[in-house]
Length: 276
Ligand code: NDP
Image (tube, rainbow, N blue to C red; front, side, top):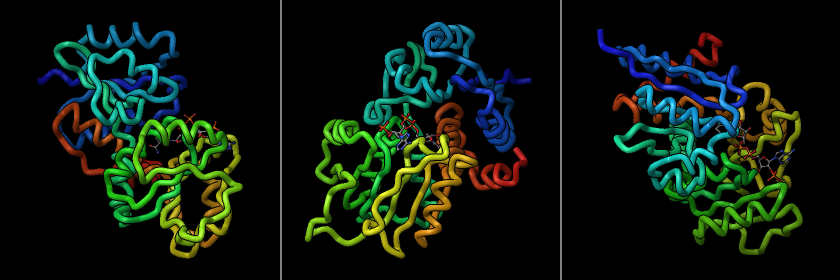
């Protein structure tokens, strides 16, 4: 029998991670053996853990909170996606070390595409300016949006992200900003990329920034999505959670490691039915 490909997800905490079940489902589709391990890894253990995985022949690894930024410094090479995000969620073995890339943003764009949410020429409002927000900006801009406006609790962090990405379509807005006469009345899409929902909190834009055509997408899923979902529905917005993005980012990682593009639909359906 062929030796299984060995992969891992590293994070702190890690016990809650759905990644092992998702990747096992992908392996079943692929029809080849995959050994995907969840490894608890506090930040100070990351350098030694990555060295150990490399020595033991692991083909790749996923990184989750709080390791995505730190891992950049431990990669031999970075893809433009990882450089733009300044974070890596996927490590790929190369003959000389780890290649770091980032599939989070493309995962979001692919999920929006599956839900028939068009990005081209649209006005997008991004709530949050942390690691996940930084990761989605590049693929959203590449999808041809007309504008990308960032609103963050700490405005300086949004401004730093805007300055780093240096694209004329990006701007920062604050809660106090009055709409300019030239501003169209509403955003087409609101992407919720804060972690506030994990604490049962929420940061919402003023009601004048949206209308009945505005669609909302929350990167959070499960209990962390509840508060934003409730708010968005009360505004009359169509709202999606981030479970599809989670499965898509995993599928893109799996494809990097194996060359096989999994079918996301059945895996997402199984997750929603708590079958995974
Ligand atoms: P970070 O810790 O890097 O950033 C947190 C962001 O949330 C910052 O913008 C922060 O604002 C903001 N924030 C936190 N608490 C509050 C609050 N009470 N009110 C307003 N703003 C708040 O986290 P990440 O960017 O890595 O993750 C963000 C979310 O996205 C998480 O919930 C995570 O689970 C989810 N995620 C989902 C993925 C998926 O596949 N669906 C993939 C990756 C992430 P400030 O700068 O002011 O501190």
